[in-house]
Length: 82
Image (cartoon, rainbow, N blue to C red; front, side, top):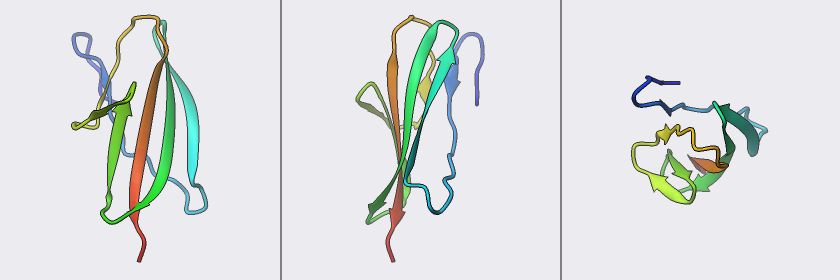
């Protein structure tokens, strides 16, 4: 996690056990709740996408704001089937 007082944000590179397809967690930043879903998907290219409240983040970073609203984060880990 990377946070500073002036620009709090979260980034990570999740790693799932081979037999897991997904997991969910609830993360609290001050008075704000983030609901995070991490999913393994099968795709033509490897990589990871991150969306926050339905908007894809090209930098794959979740900005942390303390607005007392619930936010939804989806992390998709794209795995190539060989």
